[in-house]
Length: 169
Image (tube, rainbow, N blue to C red; front, side, top):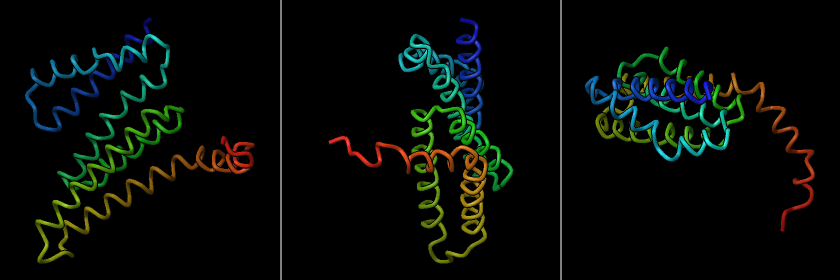
């Protein structure tokens, strides 16, 4: 029970940080973070004892917030931290939440990239666009580099698995 409480507090803190990065006031961020943690999605994880998924939900807002901060402040160090938190999601077997994390990161990168291309459509090689590409490439390179510890054996095991030889149909 204490583990569920600690994970819930850390998830609320991560949501609070995300909302503060997005520019909400402290009181609004606090109440929305509490409401975000006290929902059915989180409670199902807690009731079934899926602590790795509960911890993955904690890492998702940190990854999104730090990548957003990297784009807004044009700092690669935030992208490196975001890649670290996303790789933690992959390394601890929370694949369910990891897929949500990947979808949200790809969505943010696509929307921000389209925004930059539209804003600098006359001069596509503007420093802002180059820095965006550098942030995205460094994010994915660091994520894959850290996650390779588990990704390479997972892919090798998949190649020799019986599921690969005999299809499910």
